Image (cartoon, rainbow, N blue to C red; front, side, top):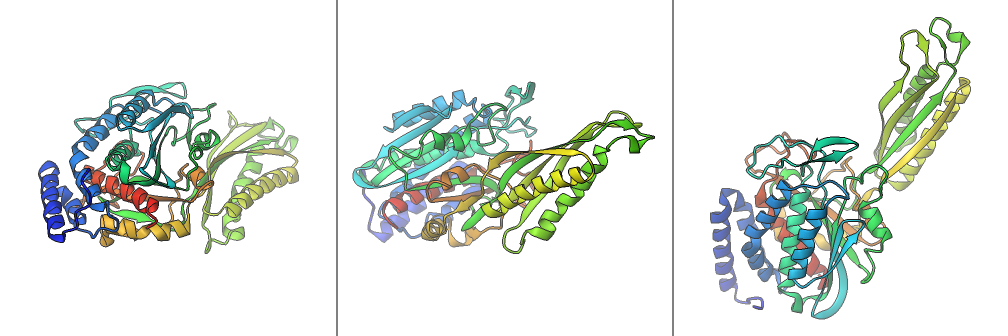
Amino acid sequence: MRTAICSVAVVMLLLAAEAGLETRLYGAETRLYAQTLTAPAANPLAADVDRLSAEINPQVVAWRRDFHKNPELGNREVRTSKIIADELRKLGYEVTTGVARTGVVGVLRGGRPGPVVALRSDMDALPVAEQGDLPFKSTAKAEWNGQQVGVMHACGHDNHMAILLGTATVLAKMRDRLPGTVKLIFQPAEEGPPPGETGGAEQMVKENVLDNPKVDAVFGLHVFPFPAGSIVYRPGPLMASADFFTIRIKGRQTHGAVPWGGVDPIVVGSQIVTALQTIISRTVNITEAPAVVSVGRFAGGNRSNIIPEEVEMEGTVRAFDEAVRKNIHDRIRSIATHYAEAAGATATVEFGLGYPVTRNDPALTERMVPTLRRVAGADNVRVGPLTGTAEDFSFFQQKVPGMFMFLGVTPRDQDYTKVAQNHSPLFFADESALPVGVRVMSNLAIDYLMGK
């Protein structure tokens, strides 16, 4: 294995040659990558990371396109996990399969003692029929909730897997020089397991994925419609918690012409919906931690002249603080039950706990931001806003310090504020971001292990 080259002149020539190779392979959209290759090295392995990332990029692209063409839903990533496990074994990783059903864990023990760093990628696709016209477009179908549906990597997890396999390759080629251990976590069912099943990061944590060896820090990224190759991060809360609630209101059925003969659950439910709006507007300090309570379904009755016996409503809660999250739950339960009681009805409230707040460890984030700036270029790294989307990477962060970030995948000649979002059947990821992702994840792991 070649050691880091000390001569600045030789380094610049090597990087320029590599940048030229990337430009020939992938066109003008790789200009960003070529520019970032000239960033100064912060660790003695950085130049080798650049070289190896350029060498393996065609394979990273091939992996991404294969995963995109052959997507699988949560807890059903059988083909996907086999490919990943086989590739990791070829690279010399200690591989464990069947974690949280279809998850794969690879462990690479470095040549010198040191800490343990984990890198995570999700694997599942969505029940979305792709509408784009890529040559590797998905035409896959599967069963979801009892229906045949199209399947697509509409959230970009195909990119995540390809990036982490590329990172696995880079790190394996410099294994003897790593001071510590790298644990790669390929996680199923980030979008949620099928009804009636467990899965995802929460299940992996329950199956001790962060132990043996015990993880000291965990990193993850997610492609997002920001300019290709840019990195967006935020210390502290980044993504919201996501919970769901169901309220069932039972009144007393009667004729619509004789409402005093019963208890109208539709009126009671309407009052509850209105009262729920006061939780955010009157009881949450939104200057410190914004939150959302939304009712998305309200159902009851079957004729215009019958006041029904029961109505049901469903909604979602989003928050950026765990104490606020709990308080909102308590307020929803209290409002629903007391409003119903005051009208002579009854109400039951059930919560489906989703994902906690995705909260980046502030100290870890501050420590690793210089790595992001060095790899992607300072002009391409920024602090982003809070986002109401949710991520089950948060379950890992509840156990060990973690840092999660967004990798931009919108072509540089497009307005990233107007393109199709994640989960859209038209979601598109610019492959020029892939080598940036490999270099970011590789350098985060190395810098962390080296104490940078």
